[in-house]
Image (cartoon, rainbow, N blue to C red; front, side, top):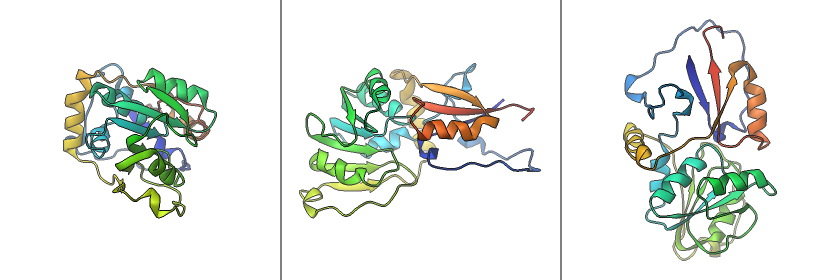
Length: 228
């Protein structure tokens, strides 16, 4: 079987499957990683997480905006490093907030709420631009806001005072083989436990719809058999 991971960043994408004559695809051996789940390879993903977490420096209090495939791994790594995680979900998503707490978050609440204390850094996984000024408002002076997705809606205008006192906004554009290697070295020591649900490839559109509406916790994985 070949396994394809769907990360939260795909939640707003649309997928259509047409006829294709392609039967095989070349894959660089250097980019094949696994966590050691020999019987459950669909659990092997998240190789760039250490890169995203590294952007927060030595922040002790980290806010995670959007709690899904990537965030539930970051929460485990951060907790292992002695950091405290504050999770922000779409308003009213009690299930996601409970999931965040079970993954190590010390607090979980709505994305439009203020955390119980100032944050040293924030990582935004949800592709929602309006979360940037909210995160800036939540971090302390000298804090950093990391935009962890590939796509994001427009960031609205915000007062300069939110950026003042040396707050920083940055993105994560590229992941390297070294990121994968570093993650694999750290994951067994945590140990990282991934929450996944598998779906047949034919149900890809419905799977994305569930991700879009927050009906899935953790990661969704599409499985394509030889018959597909």
